[in-house]
Amino acid sequence: MGLGNLLFGKNDCDELRRKFLNSSNLTPKQAVEVLDSFTHIEIKEVLRNLKDQMEKGLPQVKYSADGDQYLAKEIGYKNSSPVILFSEEFYYRGFTTHFYNLLDKAFPDYSVANPQPLRGIIMYKR
Image (cartoon, rainbow, N blue to C red; front, side, top):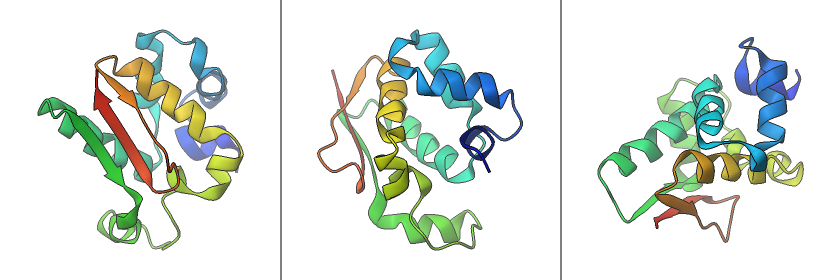
């Protein structure tokens, strides 16, 4: 399964994949479009969790990868491997950087500050 299908299902995956891989050059509106287009259930859950915290106006929003196995069980995903977003493969292929770029563009009130990207996401209010 290719990256586009894995992340976006069949939703114009070629165009969305291109935008994802060109994340640093997107407008905020385009970044939101890409984030909203993710169909991978684990990534959607992480985004939902971060957005819920942002809506509360918290100065720091975070998602810890330490709860990966809990997340996988909660959303009915039978695989107990790490959430794809925090996997070594996602990181070493450079996809984590693209995802962080999308977050920075889509949520201008927050900035990603991640010293340990395989452990989760931390964003601080600007």
